[in-house]
Length: 394
Image 1 (cartoon, rainbow, N blue to C red):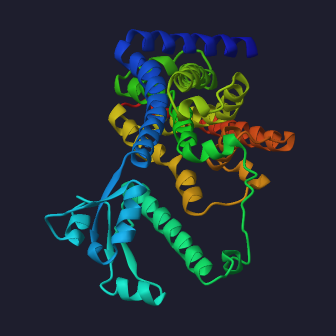
Image 2: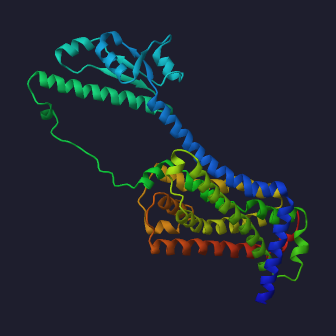
Image 3: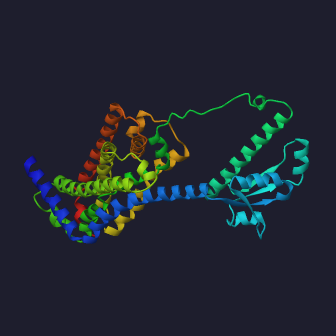
């Protein structure tokens, strides 16, 4: 009985893989577009962000300075720091709102009076805090003004015969204990979502065609009428989809490794050693089986490919939930998280990216919960195939 079921499983698996190989477009989409798109998206975004930051930090910055005539020394000092004065033909507030300018300075009219009296003079940094592309210019201006304030304050104390160190009772320093991998991992926070999504729906093209597609083509009833056990038929379809998904996932990780080594900047700084890639693969394996079994259960109840594909929008959003939740409300890693789908994969992948150690207990809980959920979903899918109405087409 077991030998017959295994033989049926293997036969169904080869049948589904053979049919997929005949559909060149679907095969190309499953095994080429996905593996190439994910690394290109990750590394491309990283390279673009790094190039933008580098260009904005190194190139001279020209900004408008309203009331510059009241603080000629400040304007000249800023020019020496690479921040030059710029003349605008329009209202500077309107220029900020229209996104024509990133930032400008507004120097109060009484700047000279306050300067002579030794009292604080107001200099406003005007910008739009919701524009992330303006962060670097704003921080450059803030840093320059802070340096000017410190130097000027020290000179005023020296002129009065006071040691400037008196005004600084504390010397605060930072000691960062984060690893280089962890700091690089912050910039790659979207990587877990893309990898989880790649594993979760890696076999979607095959499984939708092998379930809802066969039902729509009315070819499912003859298959169910064979002497093969329905559990073996379902398992063969799931095994074929997992084989395609695993191949796609392996190609994604290999392409990611090659792309990271060849790309400049952040790509070369990432941990893409064989050990790290291997750990990522082990982490993503349960998600591959979970996604394939879940989609088999869903698509088995669909009467057409179009109906089955309509569920894909919801499934694509599932891996996004923990990524967004952790960005909004970061939490400390706890053991119970290793049992929560999507959250567990996200946390495990982040640890690998950050170069952190995963304990044997975490591995055990994670793999047990992941493969346990996959087994439950597989059992649910096989039970659904025992419904006689499944062979009835739309």
